[in-house]
Amino acid sequence: MGLYNEENASPTVANSFAEQLDRGIAQGLEQGLEQGISLEKQNIAKKLILENMPLEMISSVTDLNIEELEAIRETIRK
Image (cartoon, rainbow, N blue to C red):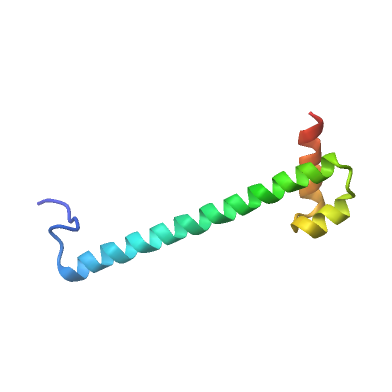
C-alpha cells in the first residue's frame, strides 16, 4: 500500500494538499519578511549607535527596546 501523494489522491485530498502548500508558502514568506525587517532595524540601529545617537532616540526610530539596543552596542564594542 503506497503513500498518498497529490497524483493518486482523491480531489478532496488533493485540494487539502494544495491548501496546505499554499498556507505553508504564505507562512514562510511572512516569516521571511518579518526576519528581514528585524535585521534591517538592527542594521539601522548599529549605524545610529556608531553615530552616537542616544539609545532612547534610536528606540523611537526603530521600535527596538533599550535592552536590544544595549545588546547591539555590546556586539559593536567586541
